[in-house]
Length: 137
Image (cartoon, rainbow, N blue to C red):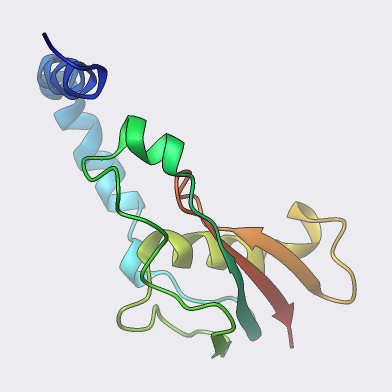
């Protein structure tokens, strides 16, 4: 008998294999447009790690390692002072960097609730998000 997680993995691999031939052309176009490691900070800011969440129920359903726990890339209270034009620091999570660059560049349009240039945002990891406080300086 196959468990749900194993079935989802197999189904995902099969769907990916079927769509791979169609996606190859589009992937080469997209890879030129999205360069996560080359994106730079558009404004100077201070980023503070406020919280690290962990949703074990979602990890059990959707991750290869259902006991991976909270994000290991950051520590609560950690601060990063980022200058305008800064590149992604070594060891910094690429998904979190992309989110931060987007938020800082559009802080007034994306977050009208920002008070005095401060906004709270989360990385896009749905099973173990990190909550950041972003302050424009």
